[in-house]
Length: 207
Image (tube, rainbow, N blue to C red; front, side):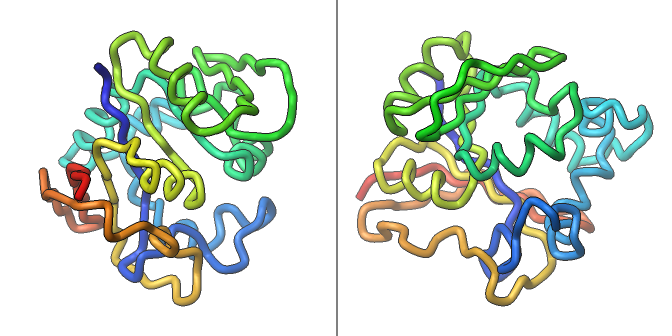
């Protein structure tokens, strides 16, 4: 069976977004501090069709391996709503994407193999549908923080992958506020460090 994994950028103090995060300030200094390393990688630049240059070192390998394992992405409505305005027509997923929402909406097909499906009946229903179309690949929970916490607390995540940027976001949105720490255990699988970011990969173990 395919695995379910979380993959997110995060600050040293555990934040995944600035306190004043909104659709209009994506690309702000704090947001770029978390994600600048991604834009430097060749595989990401090729995926967004913003140039064939870019770095080809360990961070690029990390992204390449992550992209290759994804069969389906799952995200929350807020993340989709922000990205709907910011993503190019050839959206950077190239997989089916299931959006958790109360909104009833027809699938939205984009170039490059990305189609957004809007799921109205909860996280488990979305995961079930995702497994059905993942083609044997893994399912990525890509955000936002509330969606990640829901899947972790429900015991539905196999791996947690965090790319820790060397920055503090102060009173930003903390990923693990409200996590059920008594029922979730972590086992270190991999640590990969570069000059720009530290990648941490954990297996999730139920206590």
